Each structure stands twice: as structure tokens, then as C-alpha cells.
Image (cartoon, rainbow, N blue to C red; front, top):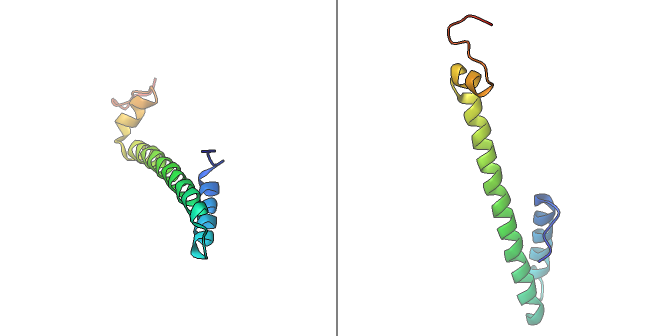
Length: 83
């Protein structure tokens, strides 16, 4: 399978396949179309899973208590005194 350039390209190709499958389809072509659609769906699921993990990590860092955020930045001003 040639991987799509992006998630958007994969969705666009999936929509194109669905449109072609909506009409009369040659049985020999059907197998190839369905196989390609399955590959594209797997690609999209992987991208979505990766994006979900990234967004959860970002949100967790935003929601962390201030002193934990400071530690992540290499700063420690819990005592209220700046260096």
C-alpha cells in the first residue's frame, strides 16, 4: 500500500472509494477497492490514536498544578522566593 500523504488525503481517498462503490462495481475491482479502503481506515485510526495521545499529554500539562509545571520547566519557586 502506498501510504497517503496526510490524514486529510486518506479521508478524501476513502470518500472517493465510497462514491465509486455506491454505483455498479465490477467484482474484480471491488476486492481492490475494499482492500485499499481497509488500509486507509487503518492509517486514519493510527493517526487519530496518535493525535489523541498528544492532545491528552498537552491537556495534562496545562491542568497540572503550578508547582508541577514549574518542575517540568526546570524552575522551583515553591517557597515564593525568586532566584
